[in-house]
Image 1 (cartoon, rainbow, N blue to C red):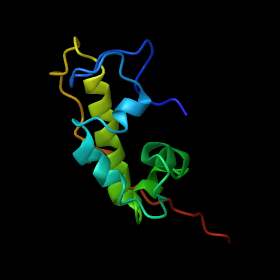
Image 2: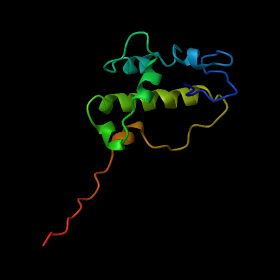
Image 3: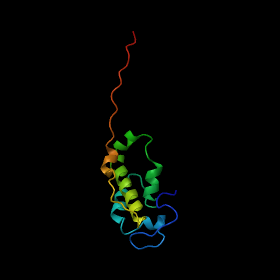
Image 4: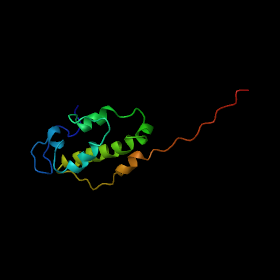
Length: 118
């Protein structure tokens, strides 16, 4: 699967030239964030955590608030944001973006009223 970085490959903030998927799977600037992904239940040692999580995302946003997704989803967002930042040396990332924590603040829809059957 082709997730970040985008093509053509760009240099990483750590100094690697034309950093690719393999590099970002072990980049020293990502190690702490990548460790959070390895706590994902059912992840086998040989599996790439980002691919594993992307292939198993729930079908609805409500699913992201349940069970393992309460920690896996924010961890994935952190990693992808960091890869995006690391692969764009010359871009300005000072613009305000929603906090990663906001990705799990899913509003409950208002209750629906059913019509009486008589």
